[in-house]
Structure formats: C-alpha cells, structure tokens
Length: 516
Image 1 (tube, rainbow, N blue to C red):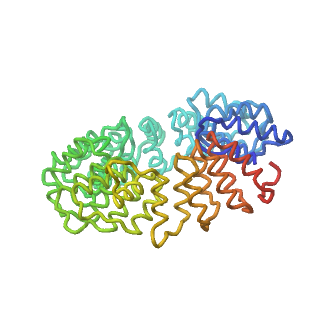
Image 2: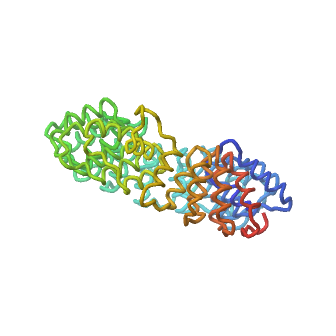
Image 3: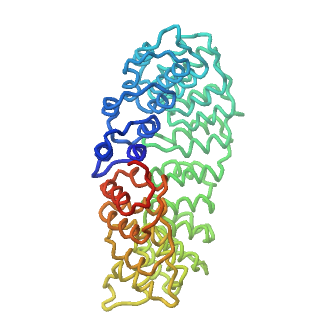
C-alpha cells in the first residue's frame, strides 16, 4: 500500500505527504521498500525525498539510481548519504545518471568525485548519457576531456541533434571527431530541433541531396513559443529552391495554425500555386478558430468539396463550435447523417454545436437511440443529453433549462428503456454533481464492474467523489478490488483520496488488501 501512496500525478487539496503520513500512522512498522521509493521518484510527486531518506536511508541499487536520475536534487541527496560506492554496476549506473542529469560541468565533477577514480569507468554508454543531457553541453565536454580516445559513433550526432541546446554539443563532438558525415537522417534530426542554430549547423554541412521534403515537413511542424518556423523554412528552401512542398508539410502547418499561423501564411504567400487539400483543411477545422484561421478557411474551403471527413473534423473540434458553424454555411449536401449527430453528441461543446446545427439546418436534427447513447456516455459532461432532451420535449418557455437529473430520468424512461452501460456510469461518476444521477442509474440494477476507469472517474470528482464511491461499493458489496484499481485511488492524490481509500478498506472485509 505504500507503493500506491507515493505514486501518481499532481496534487490538489490533500498532499501525498499527508496520505503517506496517514499510512505510517496506521502501521508504524511500515518500511519504504525499493519499489515504493522508485515509484515515488516519478515526476509530479509532492513528497519530500529528503523526508523519506531521513525516515529510512536507502541502500544504493541500480533501479533507485536510475529513478533519481530524473531529478538533480534527488540524485545529489542519494549520493550524499555517504555510502561506500564500490559495486561496478552501481558505479556505472551512477555515472550515467550524473552525466544525464548534471546541471553543469562543475556539478558533474563534484558528484562523480564521490567515486574512487580507479573505479570510475567512462564508456560509450557514458558518452551517450552525456549527449542526452538537457541542461548543459558540459556533460559531453567532461566525458571527452576525461577520455579523449572514446570513439564517437555517427548515430550519436543524430541522437544529439534534436535535444535542447544541441548546437554546442554537435560542435564539441565534431571538433573531437575531426569532422562529421552529413546524411539525410542527420539533417532530418537537425530539422526537428527547436534550436535554429542546429539547423544552420546542418545546412552549412549539407548538399542539396540531404535537404529532402521530409526534412521540410519536420521543420514546418515544430512548435514552441521560442520556435520561428518561418525562418527555418526560409533557410531550407533557400538552400534547396526546388524542394517539393508536400501535403504533409501543409498539414503540419495547419495543425499548429491556431497557435502560430505565420508558417502557413508564409507558405501560401511564397507558393501561390498551393491549395489546401482535404487533409490539411481537416487539421485547420480541428484546431482553435482564431480570426486568422477563420480567414484562411474561408479563403480555401470554397475550392474544396465538403466531405464527411471535413464535417467530422469540425464536429470533433475540442475548442469551439465556430468551426462547425463555419462549414455549415457552405453546401454540405446530404452529409448531415446520424453519424455526424453522434459525433457531436460525444464531443466537447456539444450543446453549443447542436444549437448551431438547429439554427442552420433544423431539418437535419433528429434524436435517435444511437445519438442519445453517445450523449449519455460522453466524458465531456451532461450538456449534450440535456440539450437533446430539451429539443425532444420543448418546455414553456423554451429557454427553461433541463437539469442533469431530469435529462437522465427522461432518457431512462424511453420505450424501450436503454441499457445502462459501463461508459454511462463512468461518465456520471466523473461529473461535478452529487450522487443523485448515479443513484438513479444504480436503482436499475445495471451490470457493471468496479473498473480502474470507474475509480479514476470517482477520484477526479473532488467534490462528490466519496459519495459516488460509497454508492458504487454499496452496490458491489463483495467486489475483490485488484492492486491496479487500488493504485488508481491513491495515485490521484486529490482531496478525496484519503477518504475514498479509507472507505474502500472499511466498506467490506472481503476486499483483499493485505496489511494496509
């Protein structure tokens, strides 16, 4: 049980330290084993590693060292325990961890200074670990200064090229290697880099034969707030003016257009013969609908036939109903089928999308069992089902809202009565309202299991999760809860974690937990 207490994601109102303290108070003889410690060291944990080491110092093992390699602070704390480091496997693991994680060359020297020099082995694996360091090029410099005879394989250049701040690393390797053989693979790796200096480095060492359309595809689609893809594409097309602009290049620029439309605008201006085909247009319709994106869609969508693919992309848009509204202003023929309605029902912002559809194509809106099933099973809230009920049974005045409970009652009372599915229960357990809707479903005695997904939904529901869990477990009084499901409870570390965990332990003696 200690393992699940220290595993998982971010924190909310109850810290993971509090969960751990509760477990230790319940059983003061509990020991922190290697498996639990390794699980704790996964990113996002809130427990103080210093606190755990003070509670129980850890024997150095390879898994523990590799787990600590995710954090400079954790690795330093582990090394500073003062344990004699003599096992060759531990030494290799620690050397690679320090080189992979080190913040600078001085820190690396300091940490590896805890290992007797005659026992320290610098190998090709050490160089590879240093090359993967995201913090400093000093790791590579330290390795090459320590052993200048190390062979530098050509594939190492490819591995380094796409890492952060790769340009100085590549220059170090090239200097010690007396040159570099440029290949298409190395150029593509450089094109993937978010550091434009790396692309410039590769271009300075490339012939036209290395600069392929695939490289341009990667250069066009890289995104970060620091990345200037227009500059990257200009560099490539200047070096190879005859390079082909592929559909994939357009798709990638369309995919990031809601965050940065400049690459797409540059391509369309620089190559006026280009047109957006179905696949790039679908990427535009799936993304956020900024004014610049809408302008581009309006300019290029009339050149296309509206297809099921395009309409589905707009219906699935996770950000807004505006993409669907835009495409519905064009001639869509007979594409508004039950399939599209089902897609809308299971999507985000479903109610807003249905309102748009009703306003622009009212004759196409119909409510079927399949559409209602999708609305009842969506993880995105009850809005779709509430709107469909409102549409099916208009109230007076029409703007009177339909509450989640009323919507579910209406749905369950249809003839024939719908089957209550596992997905319906997960969707309801996930929602931020009380247990009234879930209780309504459970009164129908549905066939379901206490699954990992169901318990995760309960844990996500920070306000009413305990109520939902009590209802579910009361319905399944003799459920044998697996380790996987128990882990799902504690890994969330939400405000409901401790109470739900206690509830699982206390609600029945038939649940198999072993010693808590």
